[in-house]
Structures are given as C-alpha cells and as structure tokens.
Image: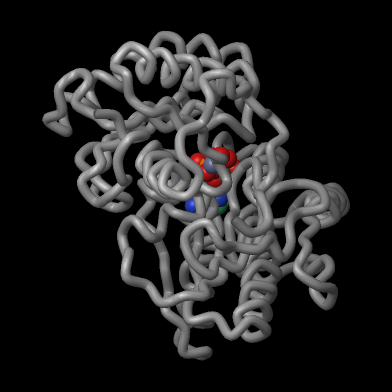
Length: 343
Ligand code: KG4
Ligand code: ZN
C-alpha cells in the first residue's frame, strides 16, 4: 500500500532530497518532525576559490555526491532501500541544473519503489526548519528567512498557512555579507568571516545607512554595500574590523526592526530565524533581546537547520503530501519559484 492510498500520519517515513544550491543533502523523517537521519555534504570548499557558487561546478558535484548521500541517510536511519513511504525533493527556487539532479533522483526512486513523490518549495521548507526542533510552538509566528539567496519576512499561522509580508528589493542579506567580505578581503563565505572580524570591531564606528527603516516590510541592501565601498575608498586607513562591525550592525538593525514591527502588528507569539545568516551571532543576540522585550518565544534553530538541509524538505513534503497529495512525476524544476501566499 502506498502513501497515496492511506492517511499520511506520524508513522509515515519520508525521504527528503535537497540540491537547490551548493549543499547536497538527504534526510529520513518519521512524520513531520522525527528526524531519523540528516546528511549534508557541503560544496563550500569547491566554490571558495571562485568567491561564490559556480552553477556548473555545483551540478557536477551534485551528480557525484547525491547517490552516496542518499545511501548514507538510509543506512543511518536504519531504513531499507524502499523502506520509505514517500520521497520529497526541492523543485525550486534554485539553480536549474542543481534542482534537476535532486528532482530526477527523487522521481526515479519513487517510481522504482512504487511510493509517492512530492515536490517541495525550498522557501516553504525553510519555514518548517524551526518547527522540527520545536513542534509545539504557539502560532502565529513571524519568520525572518535570511540566506545567501533570499531575504523575506513571513507570518506563519500554522503548517501550510502563511503570508509573505516583505522581501528584499535587491541583494539578499547573505549576498551583502559575501560581497562586503570579498571587498574587504575577508574570504568566502563572507558571513562567518564578517561575524568573526566584527567581534573585535566597534559597531558604532561608522554610521552606515539603515535603508527603508521606516517603510513597510521590504528590505534593500545594495545601498549599504555601496556605502561600505565608498567609505573604505575615502578612508583607506580605516580598521577593517570596525567596518565589519558597523556593516553587520546596520544589517542586523534593519532585520530586527522589521521583524519586531511585524510581530507587534500581527500579534505574533514567537519570532523565528531561518537561513544561513541566522547563524550570525549579532542577529541571534538582537533577536533574543527583542523576544525578551516583547514577550515572544524565540525560535532560533541550530546551525544545521538554519542552513540548507533535507530534513526541512522532508518535513515540508510531509505537510504538502497531507494537504495536497502526491505531485505528478512530470513536475518541472522552477528556478524562480516564490513563496506561495497562503496555503
Ligand atoms: O542558507 P544558506 O546556507 O544557503 C543559501 O543561501 O541558500 O546561506 C548561506 C549564506 C551565505 O551568504 C553566508 O555568508 C551566510 O549565509 N552566513 C552568514 C553566517 N554564516 C553563514 N552570514 C552572517 N553571519 C554568519 N555567521
Ligand atoms: Zn536555503
């Protein structure tokens, strides 16, 4: 009996596959939050010498890594080949060549083993990441998703029920970290390098702009990046650690200001961080401060669930399967997929 023919429930075993960017990942979950295994193979070292993700290099690496990563996730979970009820894979947004590899593998596995296939929106998966660790959280929750490719603020009322409040008009927050770090000669990926340098710098040394601070829930970071470049060119003697700290403070101030405003406006019970930038120490500290001040539950997932992983894909897949049933095997990769508004 396949999952399509019976209820999706807490015993449903789901294999998740994630290949949208530069992490090759597979995970096995029982139900929406019980993680039996979660294997992530990062390609960060492969891309470091190029200073960013090279799509062709990423696709080739996914081809090499995906099968062993899936095999490892099944062994670690103690699940036989075919011992799963469904296969979930990210179908967008992301790099098309990378998405196709995970998607094709998932469809083939579903077909061979006669189980359901379900396509997952990567952004939706990030929203579920925090709930894996804290499934009993009270809704609604404001989610700030900040990664190398995305920056968005969403209101989550429950699984599959969310509303996009705002997003970036230009660079993603992580992209701004990466570009500024490259300009300052701090290396790739830039976020952790700036985070580290900022610990020894003065966040108030340079008054960088807080773009769109008074306007709605959208973000803009390209002006801030230009301000950093202009300041360093004008003051070549400036201490890089002060630049890093002041830049980071400007990013964090705007992110947290808008998240707090959204939490107040929508009477949220909690505030949740997601995406790679959620690992930033200053952002975590500022989010905790806001939560204490506003009486909100702070949902700060561990680093392994902030960055791209397949556990969140399997979790989102479980919910999608329950609400909409399986996806057709003809489902195409959608590199520009956005977060659906509502269910
Ligand atoms: O979610 P993620 O692993 O991949 C995607 O972009 O989908 O996020 C990677 C991004 C990079 O831009 C990286 O510089 C940033 O997250 N990042 C950080 C930190 N750690 C990773 N940004 C700021 N502070 C950090 N500690
Ligand atoms: Zn991501």
